[in-house]
Amino acid sequence: MNARAPRLDRTQTLGEFGTRTAEIMGVYEEEYASYDGPIHEASSWWVIATQTIRTLVGFLRTKLVVLLLWIPPIIAAVALVAQYALRSQSGAASPPDGSAVAGFLQFQVYSLALLYMASGAGVVSHDLKHRTLQLYFSKPIAKWEYGLGKYLGLFGLGATVTVLPALFVGILRIALMGTGEVAGPIVMQVGFGLPVSILSTAVLAAVVVGLSSLTTRTGYVVLSWIGLLLVPMILRAILGLSTVGADAAGLVSLPGNVGLVSAAWVTGRTLEIPIWSPFAVLVLFAGAGIGALTWRIRQLEGIA
Amino acid sequence: MLFALDNVQKRYGTLEALKGITVQVEPGSIGLLGPNGAGKSTLIQTLLGLIELNGGSATVLDHRVPDEKRAIQRLTGYMPEDDCYLPYMTAVEYVSFNGRLSGMPKSEAFRRAHQTLHYVGLGEARYRELEGFSTGMKQRVKLAQGLVHGPELLFLDEPTSGLDPQGRDEMLELINDVRDRGVNIVLSSHLLHEVEQVCDEVLMLNEGKLVHYGPIEALTGEDDTRVIEVKTRDNNERLEQLLLEHDYAVEREGLTLKVHLEADEDEQSMLQLAVDHEIQIRHFMPSELTLEAAFLGLLEDDDRAPTSSNAKESSTAEARA
Image (cartoon, rainbow over all chains, first blue to last red; front, side, top):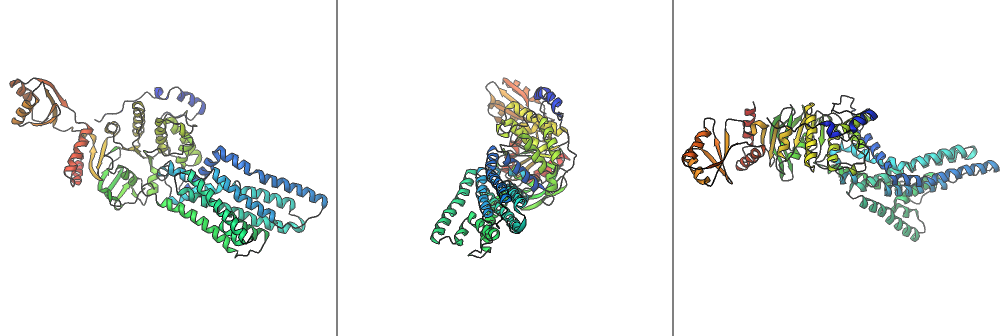
């Protein structure tokens, strides 16, 4: 007979807290019991997405940055209320040109950039660093579910400072200002602005998730993210100066492309470049990000 | 059948990690033994459906690998050797998250996470972040995540790695308790005495080949042969020569002579031989063939006859039958 480990006195092992916890929590089970409850077949991507958001939002720095980034939308809302009050007094209403909405959308890109610097850059790199992937993939989940879940988690975090404020301010704007002759343009601007907000969040989340897939060092992700934003912005500024503000200069940077899309959709301005070109650049950026994530997941032979 | 492998092969580039392993393993607790690079981890990954095979086929709990990978992963739990957790997650978050990944509804996963953490002795620490956990606590929380969904088969990869003796005993006690409650265990370890404490059977690998599969009892020599350890005061060489002259099988190990006796050979006659030649015996004891000795012996045999693994497997299977 092979030797068995001597049985330990469980009371002694667990100490007094076992009994005490049993009284308080009512969940204490001294012995292991099999699980015979329900098992769901699908939606692991949803589990990963929600857990990613929950984990990221759990950081104090995330809460602080989100709080900070909600200040401008709140100011915008207060300004809308003030504008509404003034208009009520004067009775005059000039049709808005949409520049305020375009500016708001442009601001959202920088908000998102800041949020992802503070939190979210480690969305995949932390899994690589802490070797959690081997555990995840020992569960019944597919590689694409992991990738989709991580991407949606990051998108969800970003949406808290882009899509949600856009909805809030947009609905308020329509409710307060969307009456009379100006109702049509305002609804149109909000209606176009919201997809731009979603688009910019989707693209930036894809880029960050892609960068995060390339390394185990979250610091490198943050640095490359800053570089990816700053260098093209400087280039854009130089090109803008040398071409006296030509639209083409905006194509080199992420915020520039979002600005071009906003200008075309929200303000209705005719661009000097084909309307599809900023979209094409944004799709390229997003594609590169998703491509990096896909590449990393495909490299997981032996882990997944 | 717990799992069955039929000529399973896996290559990483030019390295053959698994060289055509064929074995059928019955339910129970199985020790997976082998030196570094033997293919233990690759075998576990194969059984979990994590890697694509280059040849052969495998089933786990009657589900085919990799076609029915999801079903296998639902029925199995895995405790990896490495630390694999996000340090800022709390224990209950970590365990319930793994439960949800296994397909449990959120509320059930949360309830089971609490239960399982209490079971492994982390009830009080369940809301603490994993970052602050000791090595023993980390091992326990890894065990908890492997158990949360109630698996039929649990893969344990070096579960006592980094633990002090007390922590090791407690972990083995937990594993034994899990086993006693009907969960099949595959324990990969390089510590042979751990395998002896937990497992009924062992599966030994060496350089990607199956060296042995069978009950531990069969391996540790509960057959008709006996080994007697003999030490003399100062005349080992003389006694060795005498024993050899009388057709005893003798091997020298340091200052000890190991005499292999067949069933019909009497140790008293061996003792008498020493007395007749006035050789003073200092030590005369039956030697127990430990799992470690058997393991090393099998590895030696395998090195000498590198193509004999299948024959050995067959003979072991016959012995078991």
